[in-house]
Image 1 (cartoon, rainbow, N blue to C red):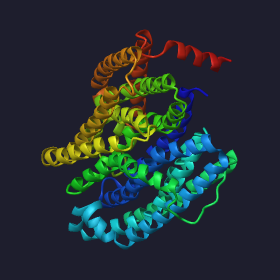
Image 2 (cartoon, one colour):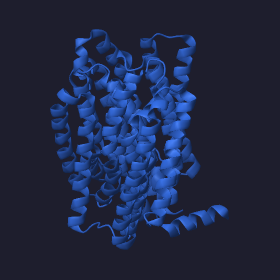
Image 3 (spheres, rainbow, N blue to C red):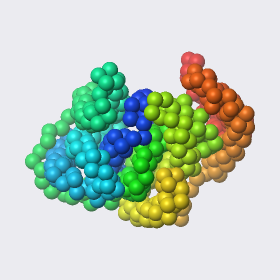
Image 4 (spheres, rainbow, N blue to C red):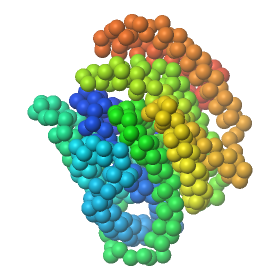
Length: 520
């Protein structure tokens, strides 16, 4: 299977989750709007998600995968299974202790880390504490799931791990529909959603266990002990976990500041949901596939293959993310209105969410470039350099958020997030260039330039089209709004892709081969 087809497999599964995520968010927006329960739910849910990034995506996608792949290829499946059993036991023990402590000290965590300003509203503070306690054990399931995902990815089975998150959205959609049917009050809906999150974690872990049986790989948990292999993993995982989680820490910093403005956390969450769709399809696919593939190439000493993988990843990422970023920046209001504006989600809420979305979209290319650059460090077992760059980014994010929030409110936080992401991407890419570990080929650089030009022309076209049709859009019902938004999407497609193909921004030969396979 080619690299692009692997990206497409993971991206397709992730896109299914993101689309269902939109349905979920639309239902939450309709039921809860940007009110206090929505603020409490999103604040509480982000906390276990932060630790999920630290223990799951951060630690295992960067530290566990290269070590497991090395064990598998160097010493065989039996040795790899022994290593996996040791890691599982140590990880579970750490997660269990952390969960017990977090639940016990949750009021303190809410008042100091999750949303300090909520203390001014006792009912909101108490609800956030209750929801966070219900959802925190979700971390255990997600972190163990990440480990199993790392094993499956190392065995080149990418789809099962990518499709599992769909269960979270399906579960929460069912909870919301049931809540509407039962006519639950807002606080009860929040509690039901929290229980749904926990249940979905169990279901997702279950499907990964079935995936392990499908590929015929199994391991037995062992008595937790600090073996040399575990010590090596922890030495790599500590900085890697922090690096992978610093994007989430950036979001938590913004959340702490945003908690001073009523509804700001919910507004940022709605905007985040939209720009996470292209990021999920492209960025996550690259992050999942590139690390094990690059690790194998470097282990084999195949530097030309490693460079080819990185050039192809950069071209794939920017070919899709640049036009998406331009579109989200230029026409955010029609997108937000079609997806969310109904029930308690008013036109004023649409305008506020759209402003945050436009600010987030500026950083969208940098988020996927980080996914392209970081594996080059992790595959070489260099975990500290990305950590230092992420810490610099965190400082910039916190400083800009504090500086911009008094004037621009929640939009200032989105701007700070984008600027800090670009800082990380430029530092990662610049250091790889300086070390001569990765320098994009002249052909890749030319294609990226042509992608930017094609995206700019597309942006001009949809700007004038949206400006012409905005009056009609604002006065229309949902059906006509959907048709008008689809028209903008078609204009974007019929401007960007022909121009990108004509300028060779997109690899014509790869497109011909792809079309040829489909016909056959």
